[in-house]
Amino acid sequence: MRRPFIAGNWKLHKTTAEAVALVEALDSGLTDVADRDIVVAPVFTALTSAASVLSDSNIALAAQNCYPENQGAFTGEVSPALLKDAGCRYVIVGHSERRQLFGETDAFINRKVRAVLDTGMTVILCIGETLEEREGDKTFEVLERQVREGLQDIGAAAMDGVVIAYEPVWAIGTGKTASDAQAQQAHDFIRRLIADLFDKQVAERVRIVYGGSVKPGNVDGLLRQPDIDGALVGGASLKAEDFMRIVRFEAG
Ligand code: PEP
Picture 1 (tube, rainbow, N blue to C red):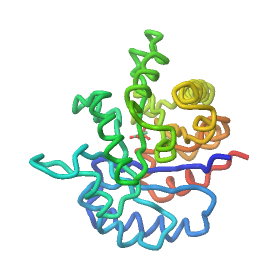
Picture 2 (cartoon, helix red, strand yellow; picture 1 turned 135 degrees about the horizontal axis):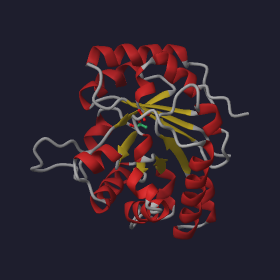
Picture 3 (cartoon, protein in one colour; picture 1 turned 90 degrees about the vertical axis):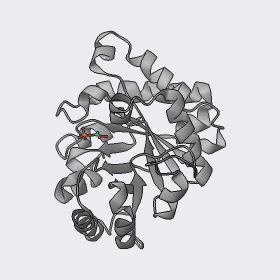
Picture 4 (cartoon, protein in one colour; picture 1 turned 90 degrees about the horizontal axis):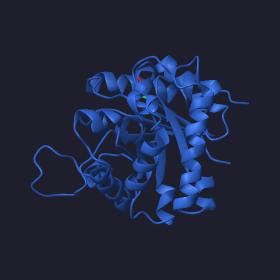
């Protein structure tokens, strides 16, 4: 049994005061939830304040990005070591906005994956096809390349520190969700690929979560799919009520 994993990616939203108010609301509203991992990813500048609120909580902190070196002349960048120092246990890597808006390549993303794993934090590796790629029948080719190259030189043991987020780009922030069947088909493909690249045990253990317009109204159906182990939530994670309902998904 894989432990469900629900993460909120707040993107470039919320001041420190607003972030603290949201983590306080989530912390008090979700204290009884013990059977799933709950993660939130505020902006860098709110991380230490959020960490103080969550010091004794069942909610963990993630960063939205990092640079793959721990120190040096890299003006403006933030390293995995500093994110761990700020209270993070997870780092999101390879989000489609980073790939599309900031030109991040699979090779660069792989450096980040390895740098995060080296600190002992868990990496949330985002992959997913664009609409053009889906319509051009390239979905599986793209997913295979992103998984192979993103996880290059990662050993089977280190895979315990990896969560894969399948996020079809056409479903992110658009209100268009992949159907339960479309998402399940992609997750099944990714899990079989992990079995080929590593082994069956790694594939059975790795958590593959879905992202792309997840909302209180569609989470239950998605999470009912056998290979969907959780959700990476953007827009709906900014409202305490919505995110708490998503965390409390009912897949039974
Ligand atoms: C995301 O940013 O990872 C995401 C899935 O966003 P949204 O839920 O808003 O589509």
